[in-house]
Length: 226
Image (cartoon, rainbow, N blue to C red; front, side, top):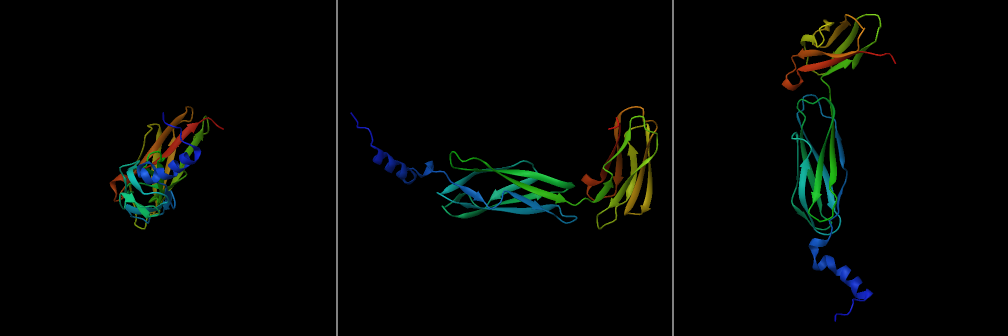
């Protein structure tokens, strides 16, 4: 019959486990920051950001690194890290075609059993080539019919011309006025009636170099007051 282990022996066994069975120890990857915000310049299409980290405890490894979008790739500088060793996850974000604030995530998983995945995020504030104000034109249901105007301002260092505009609603007319060629425009929108609730948009075709950004959109609606 095997005698039960006393408390002192059990305590020693727990202390020796990381030495005898190093694979059972949990690595603690500590990132300096889990969110990186970037403000690119006009015309930039690819951004590189880094997430430095330290493996605080026992030797550990990187099991996997996955991203939430095909536009974002991420890799660690190597596979395994000694206790106390520093490392880096490098991410490359293809922002071509994006406007405004865009956030994508990275899931970092260590090779140690029991470690929770770590979520990293890249938040990019892509400067808008064209600013459209207001964001939406609104008429109240039954409101007197009167035209309202979108103001379109080119923020890009390069001039951008509006080639054509079109309303997605046949009973809503649109008209383009050039204030300053390549820099500023006005789009007048006028519904034939405000007797029915409606949502629509103005499609704005431009000569922006990036094909993904050539078509801009401005929205309008007729809705209940209040």
